[in-house]
Figure 1 (cartoon, rainbow, N blue to C red):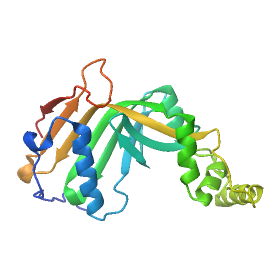
Figure 2 (spheres, helix red, strand yellow):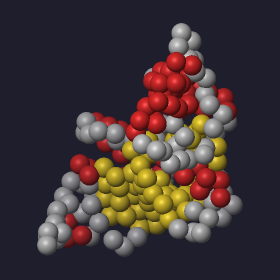
Figure 3 (cartoon, helix red, strand yellow):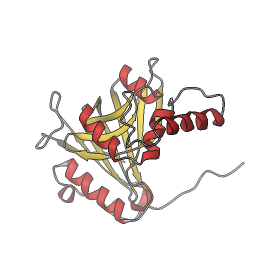
Figure 4 (cartoon, rainbow, N blue to C red):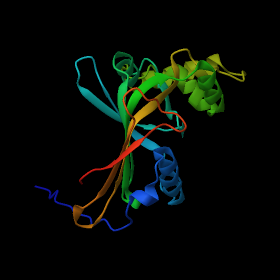
Length: 219
């Protein structure tokens, strides 16, 4: 049986309250910039956890395309599994993990679609092949095989040949998770990790100057 008792000692950095500050978005920006600076692949990759109509959890990796005090934005097919689950239950959780920095950030909140104009702007910036793919793929639906997907793409490519488009499909667009909690985890020696949780009081909304409350948690 393969051994799974693999252990790594965490010694990269610490996370103290004074250095963390009172604004979790500002701290996230610093950590994100450092993750980008390490040169690793997809520093904006994040796990997105949702639940289905029976309350069963589901998780997958998506890419964060922007973030600010109002939330974290990603794009997908509204009819995909994640889209249908978010329509049923808009409460979700994100997780960023940057192993080179021995850090993770867990973000809980409520998800809503971004404005159509915002989705249009982002879709127009995508490579043409990716825009055609958004029309071709019935995301999360069963396929008879790879050949069916390639045929659907070829048909969409032919349909938009010689055009600047295609424009954004009505079934595709962005979501923004407005955070109510953001937890920062910094690996430390002897498994005495640093964990700082920022939470909004009930009824408060994620926005510039939001009244975040910071708490240190046991590792």
